[in-house]
Structures are given as structure tokens and as C-alpha cells.
Amino acid sequence: MRRYRPTPVPASEITPRQVYLGRREFLTGAMAAGLAAYTTPGSARSLQATRSTYSVDDKATPFEDVTTYNNFYEFGLGKDDPSEKSGAFKPLPWTIQVDGMVAKPGTFDIDQLIKSFPVEERIYRMRCVEAWSMVIPWDGFPLASLLDKVEPLGSAKYVAFETVVRPSEMPGQSGLFQSLPWPYVEGLRLDEARHPLTLLAVGLYGQTLPNQNGAPIRLVVPWKYGFKGIKSIVRITLTDKQPKNTWQVVNPTEYGFYANVNPAVDHPRWSQATERPIGEGGFFGASRRPTLPFNGYADEVASLYSGMDLGKYF
Ligand SMILES: Nc1nc2c(c(=O)[nH]1)N[C@H]1C(S)=C(S)[C@@H](COP(=O)(O)O)O[C@H]1N2
Ligand SMILES: [Mo]
Image 1 (tube, helix red, strand yellow):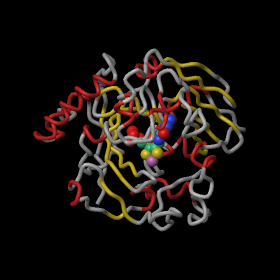
Image 2 (cartoon, protein in one colour):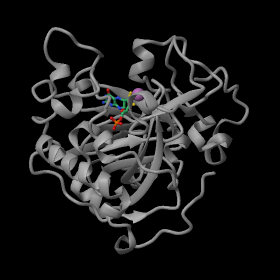
Image 3 (cartoon, protein in one colour):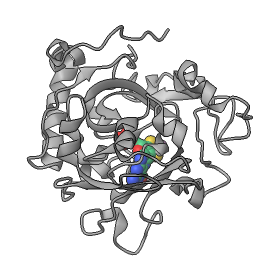
Image 4 (tube, helix red, strand yellow):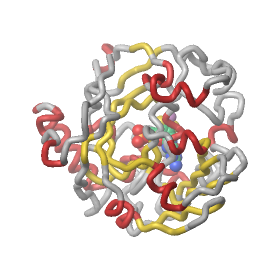
């Protein structure tokens, strides 16, 4: 079913984008690229990425869907809000502070990070807790590479993440109605954070991240529900206490710390057994498909949770 690509290949051998998307989709993709360029004025740059062994062969969700059907509450609650209301957001210049239980804390410039680590293309499944799914070609580097740089202390057990707070550029953070407490925060166990699948994405479809997808840098943890993929990160802190994550804080009966994709454990308000792939089948033909344990990544990650009752930890 899922096959790994055998070996990394040099950037020059990566399928040209128009072939990859298919002709018709390339045309809509080109239109969407125009839209993305509009919402991120002058900032879309292409990235040189090597393809990774961790990719899946599933057909990628069209660029247009990946960049117009989004969850990013800092820009509003609607799926259209992030692409339509993120035009004022400035993802550059950008630094990430990495601190807490580390030997070498530091503040890193996004451009330096992109230069200092090899950027890989990783085609990952993404499963939102709302039961829709996509297949997204990300460009990024393993979170472990950044963690190695700061040298976590033996006492560090978890990694906490924080999104930027910029009410002047993020309409969902200003005004009378605030949908969530800010900053949006997330967390992983240190071994989850160090897992080779755990990615810091700096781009998708071979170019820097559109604002709506979490520019300039966001987390991608493909075996967990999409909300763990915190966007527009400004701070990463190593700690010995289980970090808070925004959705668990606002609704602890529905969302947990682990949030591993598990078709056997229903959300209190809907089934998690199947999912709706975005960009397939049109409105009526929206063909659901079964959701896989750990979103299809069980072989790689199930061992992280041996001894844990997976029906209990959500
Ligand atoms: N800061 C922040 N990060 C966030 C969110 C958000 O509202 N704010 N939404 C999450 C949810 S619920 C999902 S499904 C994914 C969506 O990522 P995408 O829009 O790039 O597909 O981002 C996650 N990261
Ligand atoms: Mo989500």
C-alpha cells in the first residue's frame, strides 16, 4: 500500500512541478500560485530540496486546495479566512528563539536555518481532527537537526512550541471576539520531537510557505491530528513538564496532548473511522476513505507508545 521512495535523489532529479501536478491541475496551480503571491507579496521564493525516503506515493492534494482550505485561527475561523486575510502578515525577517533545558540556547534567523540544514521534500499525509485529509509535499528539515544544535540537557523530557502574536497583522487576534487564547501553543514528548518523521516545514510544493500555511516555519507531525502542526513558530522551549497545547486547554474533554490519529477512538461529536480527502470527487462525490492507525505511520511510530493504552491517550 504505502511504498517508500528508495533513496534520496538530488534536487535536479525532482519531478518538475508541472508534471507532478498534471496538466490541468498545473493550470489551476499556477492560478493559485498567483493568489499565494498576492497574499504574500514578493515573498514566495523557490527552495532547493532533496526528495526524502519518508515520502508516500499517494497523489498530492492540488496546490490550490492546500493553500485555500486552511485552519489558522489567528486569521479567522473560516477555511477561507487564512488565505483571504493574511495579506498583511510579514513572515520576514523572522527569528526563532530556542531555550529552556538546553546547553546552547540561541536565536536563529530563518534564512540561516534554511541555509544550514539540507531542505528535504517530504510528501506526507495530513489528517485533521475534523475528519478531512490531504497529502502535502512539504519542504523542510527534521526538528531533530535543530534540537541537536542546541544540545538538550538530560533533564529535558518535552518540547514546547509557541506561535507569533501580532494583532496588527492577524485579524483573528484583534477585535472583540477572540476565538482562542494567544499565543497558540503546542507540545511534544522529546522522543516524538526527535523522531525522523517530525519536520519543521519551511515550504510546500517547492516554494516558501504561504502565510496561510504557517509562514515562515511550522511543525508537521504526520501521525498526529493536524492541530499539532503549530504554525508561524517564534519560540521552542525544552522542558521537564508536559507542555500545554491550545486545543486541550480550551476543550479538554475533546482534545488531548497526544492526539495520535486513531480511527478506533471517536471524537465525542463524530466518528474518526473515515476521512474526507480534500480536492477529490467534488461536492457530491466526496468519497470518504478509511482512516489508518497513526495516519498510516504505525510501522514507524507505534513503538513510541508501547505499553500505553492507546484507547485512553488521545
Ligand atoms: N498557530 C496555529 N497553528 C495551527 C492552527 C491554528 O489555528 N493556529 N490550526 C491547526 C489545525 S487544526 C490544522 S488542521 C493545521 C492546518 O494546516 P494547513 O492549513 O497548512 O493545512 O494547522 C494547525 N496549526
Ligand atoms: Mo485541524
